[in-house]
Each structure stands twice: as structure tokens, then as C-alpha cells.
Length: 216
Image (cartoon, rainbow, N blue to C red; front, side, top):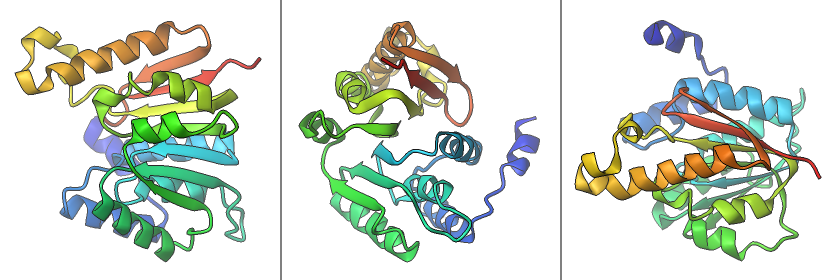
């Protein structure tokens, strides 16, 4: 079933198709094809003016979201701030963004996502936040994510199933995964029980949460 459904998650943008091929050949983790298809739908529906992304990698998801906010003439109407920890990876992302002609719309910030988000002021609010950084950080960034997301804003978090390891009790998992699993479980429990969000946890990709922040 999954193999067939993957054949339906086709990328229509040639640049993104090539970027995915390069990322996969270099073992760079980016959105899985089915998760990317869902992100296209969500971003198109939301039509955000400002997006915050934690975890740039080579720029694939930022470019994808920006193309979803472009009109028929290709004019992009969104501003994206995306945070990447690794300076060399950030440089590759900047080059890919430039090749896509989106350097005026996408700003790459080099730094630790948790530290960057904590430094953003309350005036730096976003219509949409996409989290795809270190999984153990999700719970640590929770309060800043909530502070930076506008009422009615869309929050999407990737890799929350963590290759299926999230279903193991932390104490039963390999030692190197225990903290990640414990932190991801804490994040999921906090997000799904937060009355300020309406949240769905789905199996698409490596597991995603989709949340809408309650309007004031």
C-alpha cells in the first residue's frame, strides 16, 4: 500500500526534484515525499505571509513552502526565516535558495534553533512554524514556538514517530535514543493536551503533528 501511495506523491517542480535527488544521494535528511506532498497542501491552504522553520538542511522544505506561496507569474509572497545549526550545510542551503531565485524571500539564520527562537522578540510572530530540527529540542522550544506563532497560526512538526522508536518505552530503548524518545513523548503529550491548540498526529512521512493555535 505504501509503495503504491508513494508513486502518487510526485514532485512537479523540476528544481525540487533535482534537489531531492542530490539530498538522497548525499544522505541528507529532508522531508519524505509523502510528507512533502502534505506540506504543499497545508502551505497552499494557509497562504502564510511569514514562516519560521527550525532545521533548514539543504533548503528543500523552505524552497517548497516558498513555491507554494507564489502566484501564477512566479512572484513569491512569503518571507521565511529558517534556522540551521551547521555552517557548511547553511552555506549549501543559501546557494540552493539563490539558484531557486528566492534569496529575497528566504533568510537562513545560522545557529542553534532553540537559542535562536529564544532570542526572537514577541513582535517576530509568524503565520506558520515548521519544526524539523533536533528531535530532543522540540519540548525545549515549546514555549518559544507558542509565543512566536500567531493566533490562528499553523504549527507543523516532522519526525515525531522517530522511525517507530517512539513506540518503545524510553527505558527499553537503546541508551543513545532514550533522551530523544522521552523528550518526544513529553512534547507530544504536552501539545495534544494543550487547549490552546487543535492538534492531529498522523503517520505521514516519519510522523507529523499538525496544530492550529486557537484565535484570541
